[in-house]
Structures are given as structure tokens and as C-alpha cells.
Image (cartoon, rainbow, N blue to C red; front, side, top):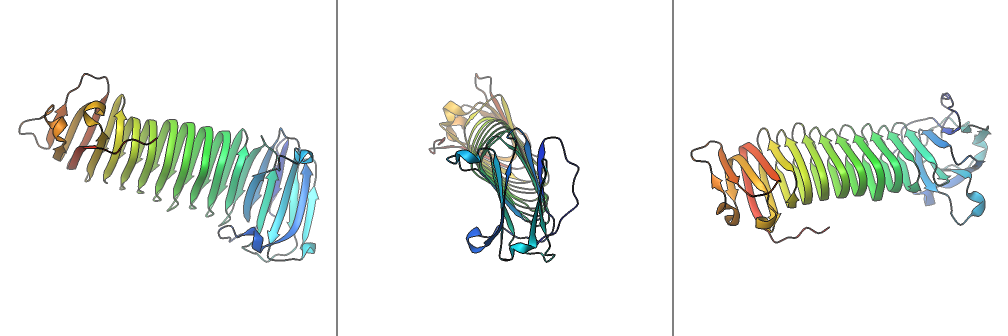
Length: 358
């Protein structure tokens, strides 16, 4: 099952749950496991909870209908084993420890923690142990794993920081926060449903990035060589594909700065504000679909080996004579601008009947 790890130095007014062992896969179904130990601890609701675990961790809010549970932390250990005598619990005013005399690891161990609302939560797991947080509200949530999956859903906080060395990150429901940071290394992917934030920062190494809806004042997506797929994207957005990868944007309105070393761009947009740009430094192509193109396309400059422009814009713009790569300019009395550069590829600018569904 698991053994006691090395204890960290306690911080003032913090509750700490610390476990240690290794080698775990994705979260098993709790219905197929046995409850082997339950611990309740009365805590100060102004403090923070640190969970440092080698086994799967799932954190949920307390039952709001239970008036006696408003200041209680409840920890339940699930396992395929049934011998509760293997478990010992140590409690002090600042520490909650779960000890196990059984030294044999079991990848089906799960620690389920119910916490009061408004409590800061920080969870860290080792090896392949996963972390699951949902339906919580607090000042801050920080989650870190090594190889384990991170699954978060319906969180509201001032700060949300999620990081995995190589595991996948998935955010379901809606995340609401002033600041949201997500990072995954190696081939780990990041997938989000709905984001509402002041600042949203996402980084992967080779794993894909996928976001279904993003209302962030400022968003920044970075990948070394992964693909990026974004829908319902708003406001100020910066995108960097450092080596190679494709960019797919379905429904954009705002200011865009996209830079790719190599790759293809497909984009559907209704509005570009300020000075928006798409640069592909090596090989690639850009296909841009604009709804009601005469109304919504700003002043535009295109540079590419091959350029194809919608007839409505072609009549009002002009190609630069004998230039190579090709250059096309569309003038408009607007403060907004769009620059697309793909010198070793092609640009296809056309109108679409598909409206921007918010």
C-alpha cells in the first residue's frame, strides 16, 4: 500500500497530509474499492491544505447541507485491500499524517479529501499518481504531478496554477480566476472547456493544446512542437509555435499575435483589433475565413509565395507589381490592421457564411 515519507518543515497555520510510494496509473473507480480508513479533522478555515502524495488524490467540497461539517477536513482512504489494521493515523494541531505498515505498493490506492469552502489547496503527487479537483472555490489552487493526469473542473479562485512534468491536463466545466497557468512537459496535452480569466497562460512541449472557449483579457499559448486548436477566442491573444506545429482557430474576435516557425494556420474570424499579425518564418500556409469580409476585414497586408484573395477584397485592394514573394495590400479607413507573412508558403483569404457563434 504505502509507507511514510520524509516529513517537510511545517509552515505556520498549515495543515499537511503527506504520503509516500510510487507507480500509479489513472484514477480507479471508487465503487470498486474498499473504504479502509476515514479521518476527520477540525481545522481553521483561514488556513491552507498541503497534500503531498504518491497515490491518487481527489479533492471535493464538503456537503453544504451538513452544518456540522463547515470546519472539518475529511480524508478517506480507498483500496482493494480490507485490513484496516495496517493503517495508523497521527494528528497534531498542525499536521495530519496517514501511516501504513504494509510496504507493498498498490496502484489502486486513492485518497479522497473533502475540504471546507474558501480553503487554499495545494496538491503534489509523485510518479503516475493523478490529481482530481472539482467544484471548489478558494483564493488559490496549486496542483503538480510528475507523470500523473490532472483533472480539474468548475474551480473559482484568484490564482490557479497547474503543472505536470509529463502528464495530461484536462479542465472540465468552467474555470474562473484572475490568473490561470497551465504547463505540461514531454508529450503531455492540455485540454480546457471554458476559461474566464484576466490572464491565461498555457505551455506544452510536444503535446497538443485544445481550448473550447476562452474569455481572457490576455491569453498566451506556447508550444515547442505541438498542435494548437482554439475555439471561441476573444480579446488579446499571443500564440507561439517555436519549432513545428499547426494552428486551428474557430471563432476569433480581438487582437492576435501568432508566430510559427513552421506549420499551417486555419482561422475563422469576425474581427481583428489594433495591429494583429500572423507570421510563419519557414514553410506553411494560412487559410483565413472572415464572416462578412467587407465589413469586418481591417486594413490588410499579405506577403507570401502564393496569395489568393476573395473577389470582394480583390476589387478594392491591389497586388504590388513584379514583387517576389507576392504582396497584396487592402486599404481601409480604420485604426485596426492585419499583417500576414508566409514567404515560403501560401495565403488564402476568403469570405465565409459561417457566423461567429459565441
